[in-house]
Image (cartoon, rainbow, N blue to C red; front, side):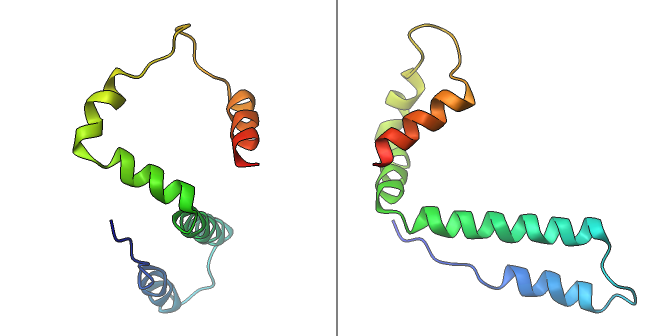
Length: 92
């Protein structure tokens, strides 16, 4: 699987904004910052070898049946803090 960086999406948005006659609002700046943070997070994830391998595995059509049958044994959802601690344990 080949993943390429799409670098032209932000400048186009900035060009539209630069043609506006007024300075960007606080909400516009917040949205632009959120988009930039999301882009940086995605780039970081795509450069992570473990994430890349997992993405290749789940994008395999043969894996769809196995993924659909996965479920929790207890029937309850995992809360955010538990998931975060498990991720931290596996990242070490």
